[in-house]
Length: 188
Image 1: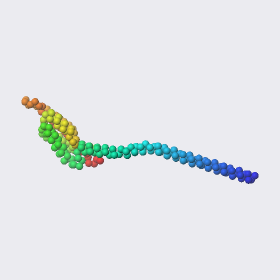
Image 2: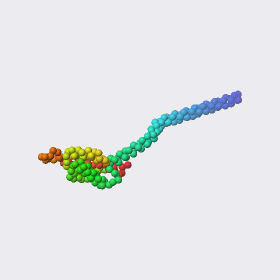
Image 3: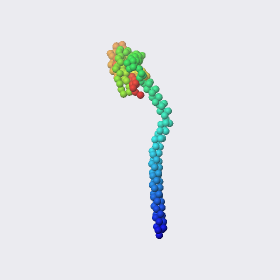
Image 4: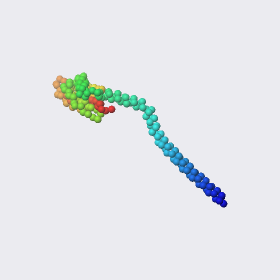
């Protein structure tokens, strides 16, 4: 009987040990499966991000070309950032005087305004006092529009002058404020 009891105890021990081993194996299997599900979810979350990165890499050269084009166009639209603003003011003044003179206007005076700062640009302004015909003024304004670097019109004040008896053209006097932009040196 003692042998039977020992046999039963050892069978019970083997059975309990086997059951514990199965529970541990089941727990390990569930843990590994949990890790697998978690990693699968993380990989699924990364797929759209990787696709976006691949898209960016594939258009990198196009983007670099676009940046170069923007830089080139900006250089054609604004004044040189390396030149002192007072010197640029004189250049803008001379260029604007030339435009109005070349279209038949008489420039009776001009003045460079103090440069004003915006977030990215320095505004170089000029005020001109001019005389001539309305047609000459129109031609001059068309020239201003096509000027590069850009020359922008800030304000125009036009006053008609008295007609002389023998004159068919209406003479005008005008005060016009123009400005050009200089990219600030600290902007990158």
